[in-house]
Length: 431
Image (cartoon, rainbow, N blue to C red; front, top):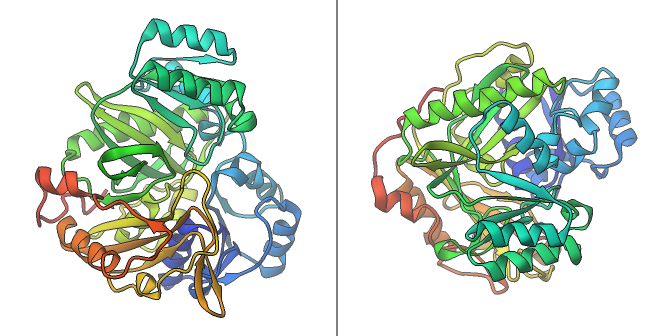
């Protein structure tokens, strides 16, 4: 079998890595891929938005399965174009991808199908949006309606922060067209959790849960990012709560999309807040989370291609997961998620995989070694018998010889470890 993965980041690296391990997969192609991904896949330099070139390549290479990693090509309709040509693709249609591409659409679906989420309203007028915030008070959450690479969300703890965010989105157009409408929603309190599932219509195969760390700095301070680290399992969230989220949120949204003639095929990601009233949705994504994929897929014992083909055939197979814990800490360029410099040398020690696989995101290989080529440079991971041991292995690598011009959070997983976990095995071997 030949598999093509669309994308070039850390998520796509772990996808290629997972397919390369499968006894069923003869070759993995990444498009456009990266220098880091080239260790596990053949990279072809074609842009993600070059739909006709991609179709031609897939036909020429006789590819058996195309997996689309990032959200942008999904929202742009790449899945539709491939499907038109009779190509087997794992990734939603443009219409179904609206569950991520438009916060307003996702919220409307949740309201209509009684999927638990925070109260909200939608605005394109700065004056009306400000009046709403003044009436509701803070804390409050402000989101750009469209895609903003995980950075279009502001958790405003006071009115000044809220007004600044509204002005940046609606007046100053910091996110372009994506921020021309905003969703203002209730601030939810509780424990965050990411729950992904392989989906085809109403066929749903849930993955093990993970927890992401969105804020840039220790103690959950600073601006939102695409994610600064993650771990799986999430021991302080019970299996009962996870099952409730699977039933009342993930399966309900899969059903809702099918009912609205937007049948979803691909990975449906639910970003959750576990509140005192149960799990509620923060956001839906139409693809693997990044960095959640880098800590969930290494736990997958069933070959990834077998799971995908099973769901494409509408068969809910039993998937086996490792009992071990996986943690990942993102290495980022100084300044991220704001402006940053590329071309900063990356110490080879950080890429040595002494703790576990290093999944490249924004790196480039030169004659003199590796340099940065993005905001999130990569993620150092470790798979171990406990989150504590995984955390110790990662930070022993990061703390030995830090590179100038890079930073990372030093508290990934600490809250979970101190709260309820110090060496017990995972309770969620099978889903």
